[in-house]
Image 1 (tube, helix red, strand yellow):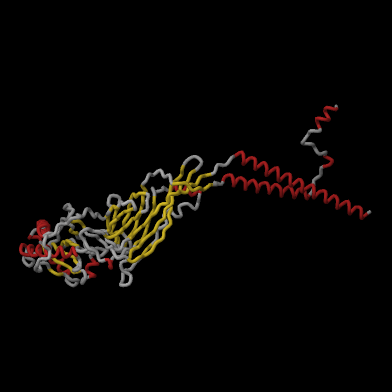
Image 2 (cartoon, rainbow, N blue to C red):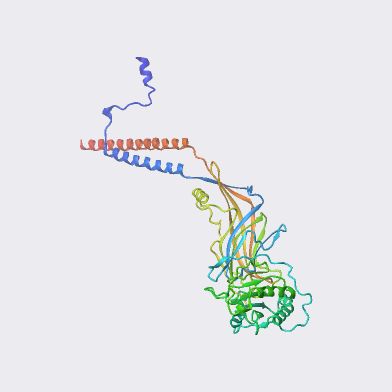
Length: 480
C-alpha cells in the first residue's frame, strides 16, 4: 500500500474530483475565444510554412553562358530608310563589327510604324565601286533634268526611266556625274527618246527638289532608281514599285546595265507596260525601299566588356546630309541574355513577384527628335548598366536573367547622327536562393500554439473564477 501511494505521487496528469468542477458562462466565453485564437494562430503558422522565403547575396559573376552575351532588340525608325540602316557593334577591346546582317532583319515601315511589305533584302553592297578615273574633266549635259512638275509625265513617256538623285555638295555625286552624262549621251544616240522611247537617263537635284526626293525616300547621295512604265503604279502607301542600282558607276558599266534593261523591252510593245518582272535580280539591282522608315530587329552577340550597339545610316559609296538625318525611334524590345519563356518567368515570379521589372526596361519607350535649324545633327544615346540575376530553388536553377538601368539623352553631334546603346556589365551578380523549411519545426510550432493558448486560457479562467467567488463571499458577508 505504501509503495502504491508513492507511485501515485509522481502522476503529472492528476484528475480533478467531479464535485470540484463546474461549468460557467465566463468559462464558456473564454473557451470560445481560445478556440478562435488557436485557429487564427494555426492559420498564420500554416501560411508562413507554405510561403516561399528567399535570401539574396552578391557574388562574382560565374555565368554559364561564357564570355559572350546576347542582345535582342526590335526598334522602329520612322525616318531611317532600310536601304542604308546599319547595325554596328564595338567594344573597349577593339572589336568593331560593321553592318551586321546575318542575325538582323529589316522591314520597311510607314510613319505610323506599320510594315509596308515583306522583309527588306538589302544584299551586299561593294565597298569598292568603280568610277571613271578622271572625274574633273569637262563634260556636256546628256541626261534630262527632272522636277516635281514634270516627273510623273516623263515617267509615263518611256518604258524605262533611270534617275540619278544627287546633291551638288556630295563627293560621290560629283564622282558619278561625268560617267552618268557620258552614259546618257551614248544611250540617247542609240535609242533616240523621240523616235524610240524605250529608255531615258535623267537626274534630280535633291537640294532643289526636296519634296520629290523625300517622296521617293532618298536619304543617301547619289541614289540611282530604275522606273518601269506601267509597273510603277502608286499603292496605298504612296510609293512606286521600282529598283535601286548599286553597281559600278563607270561609263562602261552604266552603259552595259542600260543595254540589259533595254533588251527586256521590245520596240513593238513600247506603249505597253512591262509585264514580266520576275527575272532574278542581280546584286547591282534590287528593289528600292517601299517607305521612308525601317524596323530593325534581331540579335547580336557581344563580349562581356563595355561596348556599344550603334544603329545608323552607313554606306561606303554614298553621302548623307547630317542636318536632315532623323534618328527618332520607338523601342519595342531590348533585352540582354537568352530569351526567357513564359513558364520560366512564371516560376520565377512565384518566388519573387518584383523580378523582371527591369528585364526589358526600354520596351515601349519613344525617343523623338525633329531636325530643324536649332535641332539638327542629334544623336540619341542610351547608357545601360547591366546586372545579372540568378534564381535558384532548393533543387534546381530556375532562371538566369539580366536586368539593367537606362539613362537616355539627346546630344548634338558633328558627325552623322546615330542611335547609340552603350552597355556596361557589372562583374558581380545577384544570387537569389530559396530557403528550406522544416516540417518538424512546423509541427513543433503548432503544438506550442495549442498548448500555449490552452495554458494561458486556463490561467485566465482560474483568475476570473476565483475573483468572482471572492466577490460573492464579500457580498455574502455584507448581507450577514
